[in-house]
Length: 401
Image 1 (cartoon, helix red, strand yellow):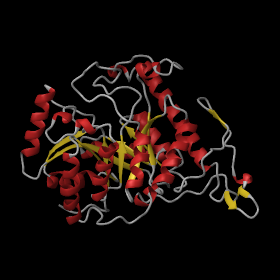
Image 2 (cartoon, rainbow, N blue to C red; image 1 turned 60 degrees about the vertical axis):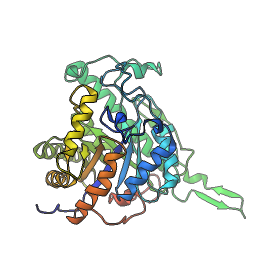
Image 3 (cartoon, rainbow, N blue to C red; image 1 turned 30 degrees about the horizontal axis):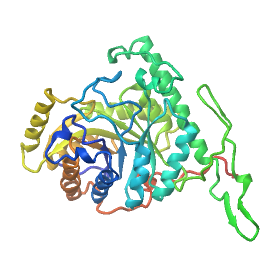
Image 4 (cartoon, rainbow, N blue to C red; image 1 turned 120 degrees about the vertical axis):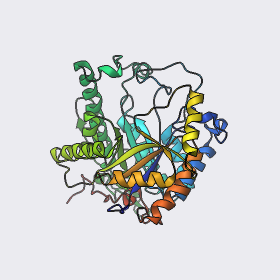
């Protein structure tokens, strides 16, 4: 098989005991450690040993559920999680190279709070922070805050007039949210801190700026209370399955995670995102599109499929996902990634079905295979997440020319 035109970007999505709902019951699983800092530190350290670009850490404002619209009441699957931003901040000082992108729900949180939390993460990590923006359409999550009502719409009705109106509202709000966060990151110029003991001046107040954002969803004056992050703008990512989130990726994000099930669908998604980029005036900017895949990996052919069958038996149902599920060898996964990459994808975000087992198969099996094919790096070549992704450090919008 021919080589990919350029080295792939490779990420891992971390969630609990793994993405298969029965993963916590596997012999190698560590369910007693899910709420410890050490567990997450070891997972991220393993990902860094594999030279991965970044890890994402899942989060939500409600218990995990098999029901898209609300709680399912199940007690046989992992429920509960740590705060993703705080987890990333705890892990950051223990790592040196890998990017850290926690998920954060924009729908019920304030952009001012998130802006300083992610800016802090960027300082703590030395310029390796990002954030995955999520929206929430669940009525039970809205009830935690009592500030708005969200209608209970089944997935089948998302393409109804009411469903499309809700999605446009949620993702329109998310776009404004990202704009506020980005302006707050720029509200301090890079040299606003003087720290001149002789004159007694710590900051130059003329280099702190009101952002004066006034929109349909937010009214934020600024400036931030946190200086401009080391990257200038930490990386913004979003998961997208359809038109509204594709538009959010194209207009507001640096990285989009998408879920194609074949190369034709992958090419179609990339084309939609690029078209929306042009419409938004971002045609000259780099927006990476990474495909999500759930993976079960074993070196011996057939073993991963057997493991998937065992997990499905514990689940008492075949596991399905929004993303393509692959159970195979590292070489088979490498073949698939190279095939998908030809559709215009920048790389992939892999969701290990079980943790830590499948993560180690990625770092110690897949990565060496891709390296042998010349499709993945052999060492880290940048000190920031933006550098790893080939994204320039943006100029501050408020600085004088």
